[in-house]
Length: 479
Image (cartoon, rainbow, N blue to C red; front, side, top):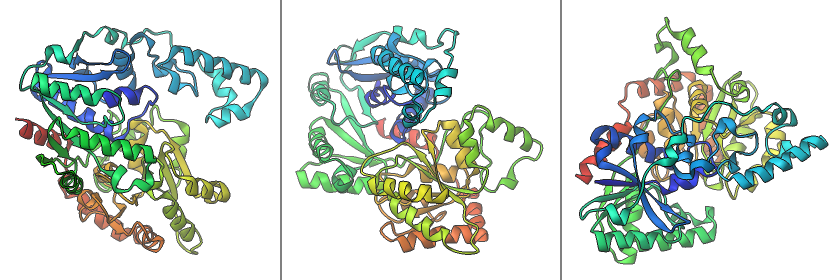
């Protein structure tokens, strides 16, 4: 039996309605393990904070999922307390799984709406008109039956030799480390942990100091119960090996590179490589289909050429230097400059970038934002951008680089950490610490369309790594 830990997914969907890189990895791998081996040999497990127990639940509901659906996961973990997104009023999504908090904040919104306090709603990315126009669905929730899934303690059902695979982040979760140690000592479980990166201790200047300390403690403690580690890149494997050497521990480290892939819902399938490769007979229909259900502000972003930056907006992503490069590009006469679009959610330690945006009025409109895009909206942005940019100081893998390649789009990529493993020879590299270098790389892809087209052709002729490849590697190692 394989148990897959989904504790981080439980915590994530408590407040968020979109998916981040780590949750995407877990979802794709677990789903494909179920497809390959059946629900009888795969169970999900998670740490219940209130009961302080490690529980397991059958994974059959995942077999029906075509994409990561926060409503489904919320129903599994939060039962009747969970509120579907369609029944959640604007600005209240972070409270949708907490009925009391939802009611309190809904009353606050009603009060400010009655007073005509538009500023209150603007601060939360909405408006009084949007608040007043909201109408909850009267249809019964299709996920209501998921709250009745049978829960069992892993300690009661685990057998000697069963595998527990932890694909997400479990550090800073009180009690879970002791639980894993018991599962190893008393049930003989083989516990494997996927390490996405060691960023909290390799670049702690970009992380809150308490988090870095917690991460160091967790990683050191995990060596007591982990039989092996997976690393999502060769670079992460090197970092992990250096850490293990420092603490005097030897554990097998298997590298399983992640995918250059992106799940696209029906109607949003990309034409890999240049747009001219699309079937002319379906071009108009596909254009219509891909716009269905997208927010107007997302569609507005594609009215003129743009370069896309995907990910949480935090200091490690080096956004200030990228914005400075765009400032320099905007001053260059004769250059047909595209807009720069940041797609993601706000992160931490990004004050310099935020101050620049505020002081320059979004660089006079050259910089725009796509807040919390859905998978379909993100696919649309990938598909319609000129190219993407990932100029981070450090990455454990670099999912947006691979996703960009999947959509046939090249990228400006920093030549550090794991990112060259993802981009290969299909992207334009730069030095993350040099505005000059970032400027030159971006300018080359903007001003030399033939060079950009050559890289797109190289992408189209390259077999990219898929999530099936990732799953096959996991299956081979676990077997």
